[in-house]
Image 1 (cartoon, rainbow, N blue to C red):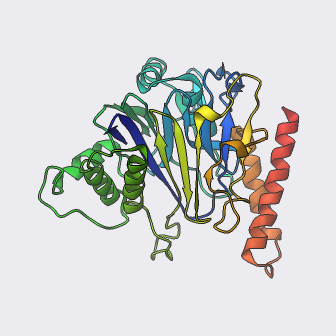
Image 2: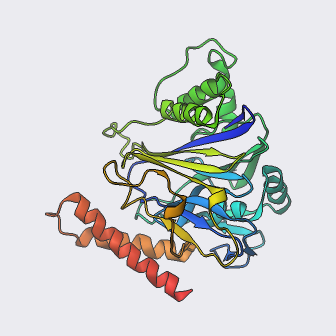
Image 3: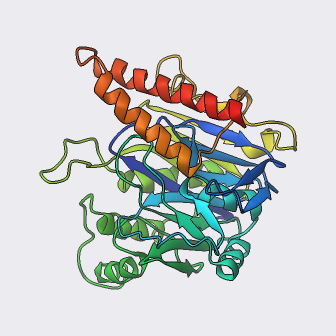
Length: 366
């Protein structure tokens, strides 16, 4: 986060993962009734509309609401959420971020609710058929405020400060804050590191966001944040020995929280698109809408530039704990039944088609 970009608050994020996440952008309006996607005990109606980046069209992983509150889910291997406790408010991983975008205008509001209610995030099956995801959440807003939520040993740790501008992955946030102090320009004398390690990326992002000249335009501010995110991105590469899930940066976003604009840049379908939230209809009853990036974001003849008018009505279904398990089982079964002679792209599409069909069943049932 860059909270003093000549009057604007600018934030960027990289999505790093070892396989395509089939990310599309979505417009989600006010007035939508949702629940915790665990047992349905926690219910709410969205107060604010938002633009989000989805994963497999079944959960929110990044986004900003119309008040300029943004949220970003990243991997944290140390996450441990504790034994499910029905006496606490519960939120499935799939709806964790969306709860905050739906209900709060500022980080301070979100932190206050969180500290007062001690919600518990409930882990869910990886819909790709892999291991259980382990995630933490960053929030930032148009006032320049920031918070990081992490679950360690079953306890929720909240790091809330306007001084917290950077979050990466492991180790936990308290350790990151200590590690970064040894580098030149950040309190120490060690040279700035250059590896893909999360702690090294934390140091580089911290250094460069604190060493930016003031931009003279919104374009300059966006470009500067994009440069920082590319400096901390992970290149495409073969996995290192013992690290089969080596991540690569799939996409990057830059968000203007002051005058909400969401800029999305793909590394796998190289193109850049953006949407100004003021151009979208978030009114109650306007319906969910989807910007299809999976099929329409490529260099030649694909989407680019301002795409606010390209969203099409489509239902966004956030999966429940049980539904995520069913999708994971479906994917595993499909993997074993595919024709190995087919090109990998066709096999991936076959699996995605099966998942899409299952999602249609879920939507039809609601």
